[in-house]
Image (tube, rainbow, N blue to C red):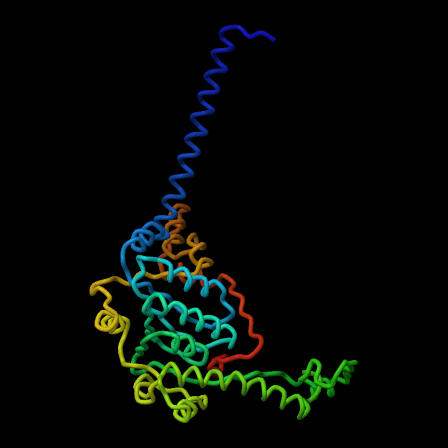
Length: 326
C-alpha cells in the first residue's frame, strides 16, 4: 500500500520519538546503576585497590567450608598493588575442614605476600588455626584465644523414643556402619572409632601450633588442652607475638618486611559478598530515599541482618561453645 507524503512524514516523526524515548530510558538506567554503584562504594573501592595498599580480610563468625575465602586468598597473591595482607580475625571457630582449608590458603599466600593477623574479640579453635597461618599475630589484652582441640557430637534420643513407645530397627552391612546412631546408645566400639578420628585431627592441630609458634611438642600440648586465654596470657604462652591492633601489625610489616610506611588498609571481601553491593548499608539508605523513606545506617544494618544466612554444622568441629543466652 502506498503512503502519501504526510503519512511518510508522520512515520518518520514517530520513529524519531521512539528513538528519543529509548535513548532516554537507556540513559536513565545507566544513571540509576551509576548512582547505585556509587552508593555501594564500588567506585571508591576500585580506586583504592588500584594503588599500593595493605589488604584487610575479615574472618568472622562460624568458619565453614568457604571456597570463596580460599579463592580470595589466591586472588590477593596475584595482585601487585597488594603489598601485604592483614587478617582481621574474630571467630569462635568452626568445622575442622573449613579451618584447614583457609589455613592452607593463608600459608600459600605467605609465600607471595607478608601476612599478619589482628585478633578482635575472639580467635578460638579453627579461628586460631587460621591465625597460625600468618607471619605475625597481635591481639588486644582482653581478646580471647586458644580453645585448641577437636570435637564431634552426636545425639541419643533412645530414652525419649522408649517413653513414646517407638522402636527403630535397622539392617547393616557391619556393626559400625552409621554409628553412633541417635536411636540407640553408642557402643564402646563406636566411641573408640570416634575417639580415634578426633585424636588424629587433634594431633595434627597440635603439630600446627608447635611448628607455627615455635613451641616444643610438650609445651604445645600443654596449651592445647582446650583452654582459652586472654591476649596477655597468650603472649606469655607463645600463642601470639604481641599485644596490639592493626596499626601495630602494620608497624611490624614496615620494620620487618620492608613494607612502605603510610600504606592504607583496604578491605577485600569474598566474591559472594562483593556481588551483593546492592545490599550494602549505604545503598539501602540511598534507595530508601528514592522511594520516599528515611532510614539511617543503623536501621539499614539491621535490615541486612534479616537476610537469611545458611549455617551447616557437619563433620569434625573445632569451635568454642558457649551457653546460649536464651
